[in-house]
Image 1: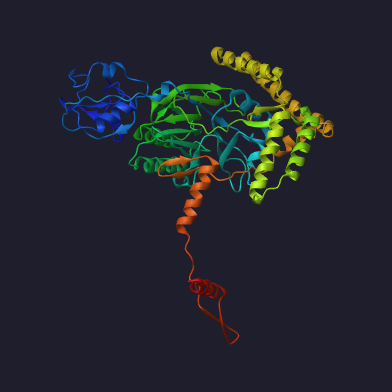
Image 2 (image 1 turned 60 degrees about the horizontal axis):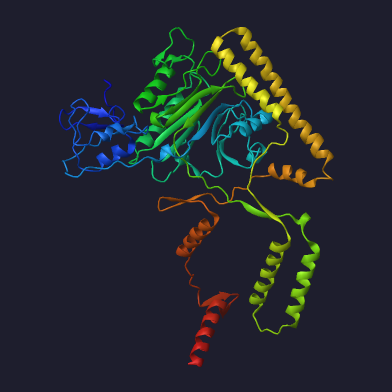
Length: 535
């Protein structure tokens, strides 16, 4: 049991015997069990009193999904029926990975950026200092599997934030949470659990107190919601004078003490844990990762970055429902049995010409279409394929070099020897030059030389860097996310039908001093007249 007081907004229970408040984490209570108690009338006794109306197995079978965040609801009167804890799905479903990256220009590091996505395959990227502008489309630096929300600096390219996510994850942007600072907020609704809020924040200077105040205001809005949400915040906060081991300001540091104290106060008042404990630039922790639910954190690691900042890689123990596209069938036409196809179609033509049927045009077309498909299935081999992103210029030797760079980085971190750091930095430059050369040679050499012999590879590359086709975004209907194209069409059709009303047209109109009958009124009168004449 901890001795820390329960703060406003934290998940906790009031003991019905001693009256003491206990954090749900300290009571070894997962989210499902906590919600079960709060939403019923059970008495609850804290572990100190050692008197509870639950089975001892209730707490011995607790999961890792405990929550240091918050609620101040009290339990009511005792019931005779025992509550049964719900089993958590987090143990059986794989979690997701986030990269927190300071880019210092995405476009200048496309080869390293593409190889990073190909190697790690993250689900989300929370990036700062993108140095992008409105004329640069997402498709120019993102593979087909990903899309992104951006906030570029309008008058200065040396900034900007981005939230990259896989297209099969239904993320929505929360513009209502974004203030004037460089930040992006997104939400992911997951069936059966609390929603996730992702915040990507860039504080460009150590004394930028306005960004911290804007950050504080956003968290106050989030805390005002009736439904609790798990929050994940990452970004570059540029606050080198904070010792995150004991949450104190480093003495005699040139960075702003006032901004550092306010930042720590905002995090503590909102129950946010700062997870990064290793330096991300020189000897300072500038790139932070925060959450209000430490139980969902699986792994936090600092790995070699794309700029003078290192990256923060985090793994989260939350299962995601992905909207993966099903495999599609393609026909291998170069292996088709053309002679048999001609025989079958000639036979079908003779039978169709000799037959006398009075079928409708639609029926005739259905017969013709079914016959074509039957012939294709019989004489053209096929295979099932799924969309898969590959880097044609990223070879095995490049993967080995990236792994060696990672090993040199770990070695330098562990020893702290300047010679090891110099070795790592020099090899990092070699890797960057090698990747850039490989990508450049592929575009200027392989693609250009084989454009006549293999135009498919050339146009495939060109199509990937064209304008991104966003399509219709995922829709939220009755608290459920609609993701498939067919369901979206049905929802939009119903919406349009519900708001459509027939306009009432005037019977007569005046123009040029002449009064005449409108076409719609004439048509309606003619239909009524025809109906009366038939009766």
